[in-house]
Image 1 (spheres, one colour):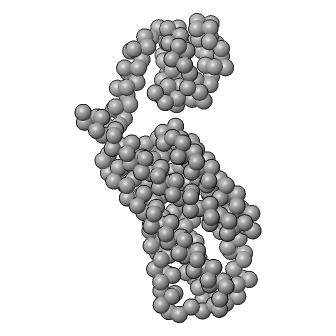
Image 2 (cartoon, rainbow, N blue to C red; image 1 turned 135 degrees about the vertical axis):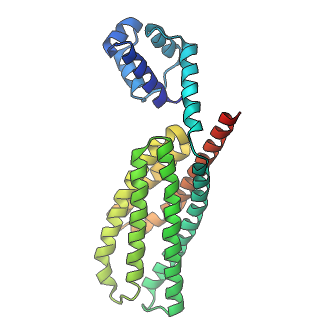
Image 3 (tube, rainbow, N blue to C red; image 1 turned 120 degrees about the vertical axis):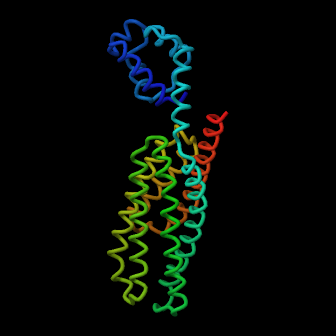
Length: 273
């Protein structure tokens, strides 16, 4: 049983018995700080501690575990099959998004290093890749919206929608500035974009770290990489370093989405059995 679910269930049980945390301390002799941390989902207590608390609440350990299992199976059975397919598509879209970002990043560097004013063919290629990048990003982010619903992570949903809006806006800006000859005039808008993306990456990173209870260590690693990348972007001057961090960050995020796909697949199999 994961710590958030355990904490919520114990809190609900205590309130059903009309007991305060202080009264539960007197009955169980477990410290109030320990009870507070368990109910807040900050720690996963030993089984012995859980049994002591349940005994004080007049509930058997076997009955408590049985009820929790039934609740989890009911929740899993309510997860639509479409969510699994969405996560798989999101993982594949993430790979496309990453490839597009790498190619477009290389083209941006080439654009800055050479004479401005590309040929019509190269401009068309750049615009086409940008459109593909925006679409794949939206599908990629949609996977995290699904995970945010499954694991009740509102911050992740907000960050995912924010990513869609931000990438779309940057795509429009990139296309609209292809014909600009004065590079210095682009510093201000792209500095603002860098700062906004930095803040969004930090929020996204925090949301991913909160996802680790359900998705494990991969979610925490992805979150840390996003936060580091966000800090680089906010400085503006370290903008290009963020591209180096982006590659492993997106790869780990793709793995998180695929793990989510496996999680929902196994959940469906368990319920069907």
